[in-house]
Amino acid sequence: MTSPLIDPPIFDGHNDLILRLLRDTATAEGVASGLPDGHIDLPRAKAGGFAGGFFAIFVPSPSNKAERQDEMNKPEYDMPLPPMIPFEEGHDVTMRGVAALEALENAGAVTICRSVAELETAIHGPDMAAIMHIEGAEGIDPEFETLHALHARGLRSLGPVWSRPTIFGHGVPFRFPASPDTGPGLTEHGKRLIAECNTLGIMVDLSHLNEQGFDDVASLSNAPLVATHSNAWEVTPHSRNLTDRQLQVIAESDGMVGINFASAFLRPDGQMDSDFSLDLLLRHLDHLIKFLGEDRVGFGSDFDGALVPKDIGDCAGLPNLRAAMAGHGIGPELMEKLAYRNWLRVLRRTWGD
Image (cartoon, rainbow, N blue to C red; front, side, top):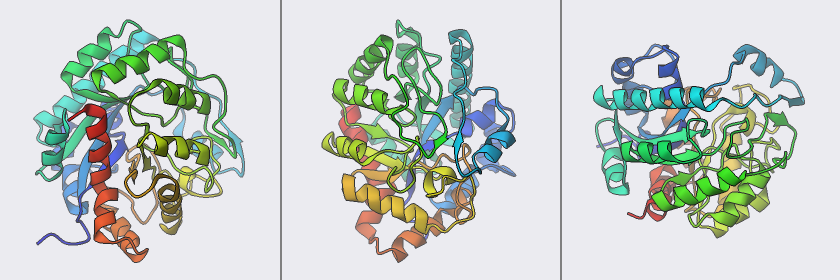
């Protein structure tokens, strides 16, 4: 019998494990057998009931992580957006990211899922279920040849931007306290990208888009609106979080939001400090359910891409989250929806199967 602390399995809206593989700090074989650090590997996933998630392919900007963390521990901060990444560089890193995800599958760490039927089976399988996701479309050309080629290899989710401009639109900076209304939205290329994703059945991720870009997608897309790893602005007024108006728009589209575990987006003071109770995460959960309902909320941890609450730590710590939710009065049916069924529901509507 499965322990209630690791059941139901948690399927996750966002992780950055691929970035660790690209930086040579982890190998596919290491993910399958166990890593000494980071947030995700297969043994810890099994221990924590981590069923997998959206594996982000991301083109990093040059940065000093220590300096960024120091800046985000100030009472207020406004970090400048990195410059646009050239297409050639973005394309190269994106293709290496796709190869890294395929290497994880070859090593027996993940199963890449291209349909809801495959995903539903893999969530209960022996390895991690993986959706190929692009975070920031720097590697996509405006003629969409790369988009079609990657769709054939399994791409099923895409965010037009990370927190920097692309030829498709504009992202939000790391700014606190601040509104997500930080500038212009989608470009003409970006508007065509949304239409092409709709045609192919590729989910469009709203996380990292600024408010105008969010509104542009909402006016153009015929699919449910989804933010894979974003939180409630009313609880934490960070530019990366979603206002109540935005939550209402997502609800009206029958979309979904995955709660981000990043400390700065959970804490009301916006600090990049992991020493806090999971009660703060539950505040965001309550607020999102208030606006979105019980069928439109899940998790989008940002594992391997963020400083997460100390009481979670890594994917093996997810039993602590389940215990906190149960102690908060969340019963088995809602727990299962939040853990993975809501993701299956919104993807079924988006992918059409």
